[in-house]
Length: 179
Picture (spheres, rainbow, N blue to C red):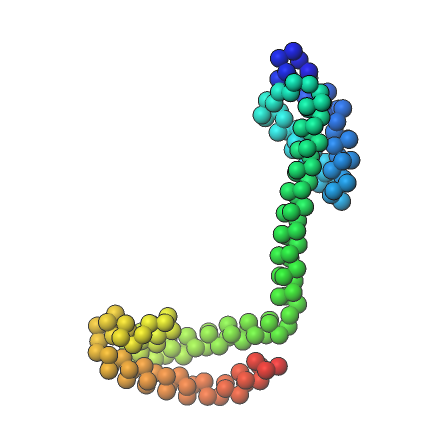
């Protein structure tokens, strides 16, 4: 190291040549992939270069290098655990045929429901869509500026039409949900 203790380009090259392999081997104690260890150690040296670090002596430098390597390995392991947990839950969801069929059924029922709603007269469509959004009859009446009794009547008529259109699906839906 130079006299002012700030690492020069030559210092960095010497430090890299001296410690690179040892740090990769140290990282390899914690991480299984050699490429991952090499990338991690290279990142440490890039960080050294970018930050223009200074160290009072070689012992401090060595402590910094090993501690940084350990901390970066720990972060990689934590990140991999999160990725593995997410991947496992995703795989489980993909492998679960029952869940898959249920999701397809739900999407198909919703698609057909909105298709059936689109065939209703415009005012009935508006009322049913607002109702599906969770609005109460009084809120629907206020939003559409119509009487509460009109909302109740049109909603009731709409549900009757929709029930008739979906009557043939009741048995099919039941069996798909059960099996």
